[in-house]
Image 1 (cartoon, rainbow, N blue to C red):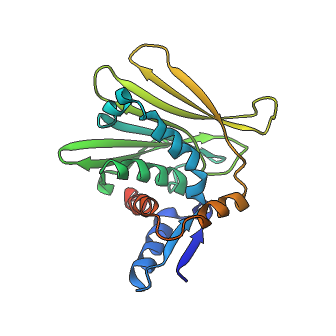
Image 2: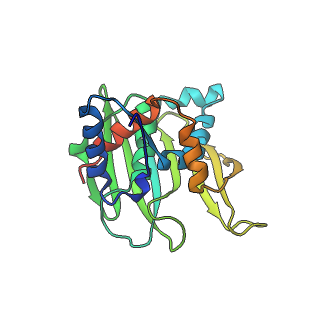
Length: 226
């Protein structure tokens, strides 16, 4: 095969399965391209995060962002291996900015995984937290916050909202930007249903290697020691 598409949402041990797939692909000599339906589920999140930095003022803050908090959905809050979606999202953002994982600094406090990445003499912190919800898909990202250390501080947030009228099953991503103590600027984007047919179509549009995805996948596999 020269094209393989999987769904990492089904991974029971993402750390192990990420690395296993990497070893299979790197060692077979055929160099097939890998796709992931879970990566397509994250497309709206990645697009909105990128749009935060469309303006020159926000783009100037991008290099000052040094902390990320990701909340994901679980029905059984307990310390466990991190699911694939938050790892892929963290891998994508930090990989684009050149941060390198430091898995030896991975620790758990309560129900929050604390991950550390480094670049030169600087550090980037990632917190991955569980949010107990009885509905929705296990392991899906439900919120993200990016924080800058510069003055004034800026905070970029994405929050998944469900059950909004007129369609109680509709999902909306609310994006907000806050600077210092000022009131946040908000916008909402409706999400299209993520059925597997649409996700597969999104993957099949990629004709060869998706280098951005492959880099995010590699960093996701290196991020966790759990």
